[in-house]
Image (cartoon, rainbow, N blue to C red):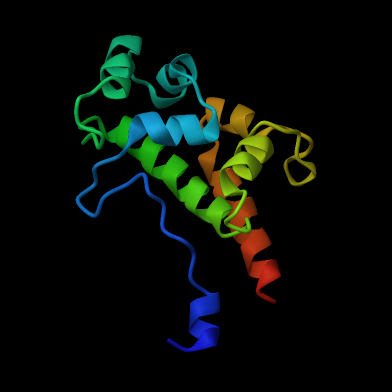
Length: 136
């Protein structure tokens, strides 16, 4: 693969399958998001969230459209963050970033935007950072 093309690729998230299954428990852990936050932000009941977190299957297919979109957006955010970390310390860097005030977000913490279902703002800011890093 040509170096220029390879530079544009992001590492793949380990939390989603090609058929739409989402590893909810591990994605939430990677972003340091608790079940109460998930329930309020995704529009799912605490009981449903608990069932997803404790499912026997690692990858869960979420039927509720709003909840599925919530998790798909979180996975996209995680994937973008992977593209901005060095790989060696990715998980700790991502957790730190996600829970720290951020200048690009008017000193809000990314987790607070997630709580308010403002994924689009996070995705846009991360895309802007990636584009700037690649000279765009």
